[in-house]
Length: 616
Image (cartoon, rainbow, N blue to C red; front, side, top):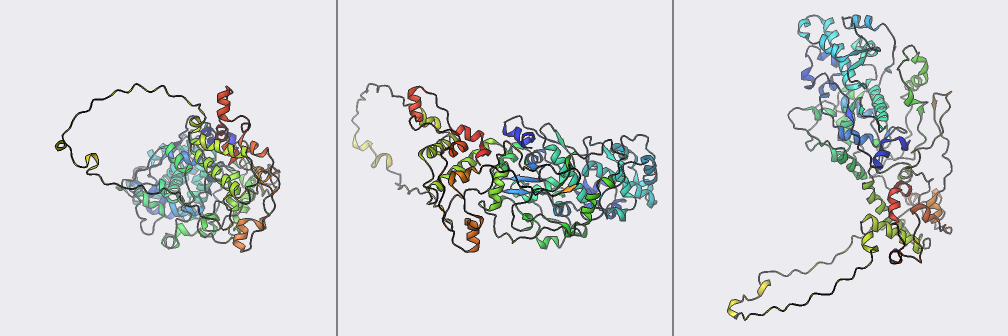
């Protein structure tokens, strides 16, 4: 779905799309803006921590840049160093919402006026599509001081305030003005309210909002965007506010950013964040920002769902090449609009059964990841062929230069030095010259200088010796000898290779979906598609010969301690370089010769920039 993804429009240099953040927080003062008489009820229901930090300002530039890297196919952010996403652990530890418990599924059609009268004490006159205006709740549930001695009326006020947080902060729709009354059925008993997985539902809704916002025509985003921003600040310290306060005792991590008077400001510039993400290296992310000592100090509501946390790389394990994503059929097409009379318990029965088995559905742990994941690991080599590493084409120049360097190093290695031609080398030189803006300098014809001007003799003056300083112009200057300039020495890898040809199928991410999977059958709501991708010509393997078997790869040999067996490479396809990097000029007609002969010459690296993903 790359062709309909917002990143495609950015790559084509269309007008930047800066999202509007949909939010209607009940208060801009945090918990101080909530009547203190109902705070105990918010705590009992599990919403008090979110109420404390709901006023934090959201950064539209940061959110928009993150959306450009969100992939609906996998529900992950695709960064240059790999995939990452918001997990249930982040929800629990950042905002303190319960992530484990009953699924938030109820009736979508009922006598809403009667339910309001029962639980809110007022029968509203205007209900639109099962929704009620947030302004109506604010108008009718403000003067709580009049009912401080009536516990039941205080509960009604608490329900109204929770509905305002639900509709204005957690499940914000396109209007930012309404809240569905179907949530009211879960607020009957606050002790039971806390047993629902509100955090899991909020994360699912945020995922859906992110997927919808990847459409270029979409102008806004709702959902729990405060969670997305806090997640980015904790994972990527380089984009977080310069002021990083400590976490209050026995509080969720997000409370560090909700303290008044600290002057927490963050840059709100879409282009700035896009550039930061494009240039991000593997050591710029904190994969495990929540140490065990910190988790042990968290309130119970943050840790009681630990049994269902889990994303492999973000929990310190080595990342294997993943299987095809397993998703509900037409997940992104589900809607409640006009479906009030559908039996959603029956429709979503497989999903409910899946949720009931959540504690048994753990990933098989791999070995612990020691240090940073190698860019030449099997996963990263697979990942680079599957995704779009760069959003802005201007930031892709450095990547192309790196690819050229790796390829030249491989050409010079014992394994690759017999597998290239002068035309291949010329193509790489052209790419370097174009990227460094030196192509015109070396291809333009020589321009002869005009004859020198006639020398004008200057009359000399007789200056007495007493009028001259000893030593002249250099009298007070200290001579300094130039130091010898040396390039840093490239460390030699154990396997002796600087560049390892890929063993995976080639996927041009500018031309087709990031993942190729056939649609699952409609009859089964949950299908794990393990159908292999269709065979594609492995250009790098054809270019450099057959790659070694998995048992003989440099990485495998290095971990196993065995010596990699050298394999006799197949003869290279002379046209494969041309398929990868474009047509090279004929050896009989160099760029300079073409210019002198009057034949127009097209800079070859111009094509390599336009087809970046086809070469990286």
